[in-house]
Length: 362
Image (cartoon, rainbow, N blue to C red):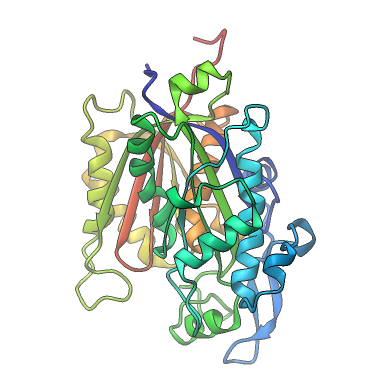
């Protein structure tokens, strides 16, 4: 059962190498279609990097006010990616004209010699989308894959106050940058012919449009999914730490999800996780899964679409949530779905999504 105060996802935008919208990406991921290609840059073995890239012709051009600025190419790319995802996510509100909407945005944790400054990026994104974003009420954090999911409880708390009525939560990143690729290559993290314990760098943007269930009903918006519970954790033994790996961060985030009152009504039927091909992440999940065995259906599905579109960096967590919500709305994955995202450094986040009963269904 849901209440009018429950936070629901009423729109989502997703731009990835396998789709320029959420339906396109979901269909391609469901069919296990991959789009990972060699690019023009070469690694330290003089072999071309294999990456995931969004087709350039599918993205909006920068407005003149931004095109004239001395932006680094990576930031310009991310602005175009984010703008496309935001426009799709806000489409359900087109007839309502709600005014500027606040955004909570996850940004990269891996940087070039010139880091992307969150406040500057938000300002420039507002210039790219004039009148769309409430910049004074928006926030951004450079915290990688888990940033978007970590923002969900904060967005829900703001919605519960009654103002704003709607919020955007998302992430954007591009790891397809020569400096970022070179750094990751030197760390031995990029997958290639002689390194199977690595990942494929990619790029994308994902945005979730949130509101309360009562608001959605009043304005005849059809929710994709309901956010039942969220959890957060910190992993002392993360990839760049000296502390030993114990898997405590993700385990704590998952434990918070199941510690809600009342507890989830059904065992987890499907899991969407930010596995990217590195063994570390599967080990981490096994700790959380073992500790909370009673909350998982014995034959739950396990989805890790990075095999199709690569590692989306800071866009990865919101992308998983968008895909899980789409799967629930169209009933090709059972409810509830547990969405997990882990950043390269300490942040860990989990969210439990449930389907919305459709009219005429039991």
